[in-house]
Picture 1 (cartoon, rainbow, N blue to C red):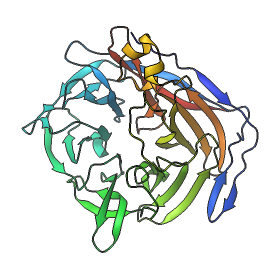
Picture 2 (picture 1 turned 90 degrees about the horizontal axis):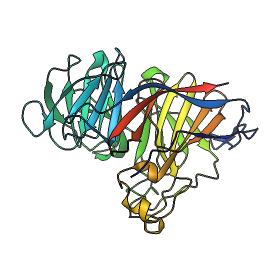
Picture 3 (picture 1 turned 90 degrees about the vertical axis):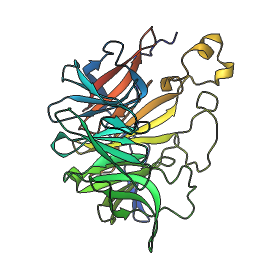
Length: 361
């Protein structure tokens, strides 16, 4: 039986890291500019399974509303969204798989908390709305693509990432979507050399309180800041030897083929740009050569294959303040500096652990 790894840190503290300009972009060296800084995760809450009807999977995402309630989807039940209070106590669940009333068509990819605490449930190329009262699921809307990432703007519109051809313009990667699922505008043109399988996938996050956005390809440590009309505002290129660029797709599960670094998430909070990088587990070995224990442990557990490196980048100075490696998968909720991870219990059930992400100077 898989036993969860403790959340421990490996802190890199290399002095240096001053940025320099190259071709209109800020190149940030791999050194650490704040030798005394460290990244800390303070436990906020634990969301444990609540009876036989509620359970989590390694695809469960967490959102937080203005009342500090935790909204989780998908759960172990297809089409279901669950809500927990600020203390982690189960409050209720809504939805099931299907095309009818209070049903969600297709697998749920993630949830977003929008204006007025409206819950946006994204399932494949479809979005459904749940009112803050958590009483019913409103009729869903078909999207023009299957989003790989999405954020909600302060006005209730959404920014979604999926490649699509726009007539008279060409291919675009990021789109402003109305609450009714209509595509209002499209920005960010892919590079001509990008492999469509991976390099055209972007990680996105709000910048400047929703007046702009951050965008990064998953396969290279190069982060753009874009205005909502698509104007380029800034480019931060991390010169990180441990993150070589890659542009070819290799088939195979991450337990069989060593995972390459990926920009999995971005978050702006407190004047810091947080970059979440998925890297191969420090003790990664192919599953076939891992011994009986490893082969029979749950193949669902991403922490068997991935660690998470979190960097705190000073936006104004363009330097890396701190970097730490967590021996588990860590993801932001999209609501301030609250992040979450998974803990598998001896019986195979999952808990979701919520943390407050802090930079200790």
